[in-house]
Length: 548
Image (tube, rainbow, N blue to C red; front, top):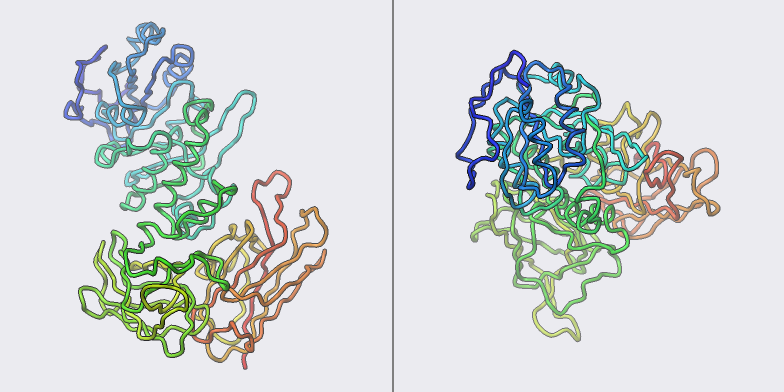
């Protein structure tokens, strides 16, 4: 297959010696943009010829082709013998699953980049590889494009986008049905061979280890490049398509690792089952010091809560250095102060407002990865009818903040923010859970709940929000509920045309001047426009802050 490029310095083998190990590594001898195309197969005699022919038709100057067969017992060996002289490496070896096989195959690759085109899949055009490599930067670790999903007579074009946007949307919880197809398939992804060898697929996953690899590589600093080219036809009906429930479960477990809003993942993939824990290793987790007999709900909060006992509780920080903590909950006491300590050394002291609150705590010194953080309240009391320790406050959700992570912005009197494409940088840090991407004149909320988070300056007298209804709802006028810090303050019927201006006065008991405030939007109905899979709520155009 190699046409003018360096050849693989390994023999053609079929079968290879049993007990194949990663130490049987082949030397990478490409010119910077050489590509090893790998097909892993098991009992694929029917589908394999289509894939092989597709690879052989590629016009890229430096392609190596590797086929790794997992000891098939159908006619796959006959197909491989028929093409033997046209395939650079044929290896027949048992494996522990598809990702085990893909990890093994990476050590047979002899070019700079590796991509997987499995049995039944095919390149979109004869120059798909050369077009991708022509656009690829020499510094890129992962280069990916678009693909077409094929299931029977259905062909669905899946267009990707820059991975930093995909990852940021997941981190912020800004995901809905439209988000998932943007993740590139391995059939459209070219990965630097050395990267895959050093950061192999997680073989504990059966279905979506390729997605997990992309997010792990991104977090590890891999340079990822999106090229707007269509690379391959991906034929459905494989293992992941046959195991739908397992597929959803694995997707959820993987995506929760990379988000600050795990409930958004649960809402996307399991809307019928509700949320699991709001805390993950990425956000930090509860360890001890939370009252076991107190209820898990709070009348003023949508989230489940844990009740901090009077002699303090402990949180476990994520496996990365952090310099602060954002924490939400409810406090019934005046003059509540909480000390934050690590190894008995104070990192911060924070005043906690009475009522429902969200505060951002800045540490005096960074907290090391996987450290324990103690929360020590100053005011607490016994709860009537509840045995055990005194109770200080209820904690709903929290997340540790690592260096460089966006902090909640402070908004001043006279500020007006337009939620359109041209001003996206002005409001990106306000968006919490449940928003789609900015459009030319507005930004849509997605799903049943969307949040804006902001710190309100002392000299603001009112907040004015400009919204409009979703014209695709079916059941009469759309109504919108607005909550401020968990307290319902507005219930409005949106007009069928034009905009509504909703006003929140400083006199509201839920208003927390100088603190972080969360505005929650709950539309009565969500609906998808034609040919658009997003479940859209309301249309947000602008928000302004009136001075006293």
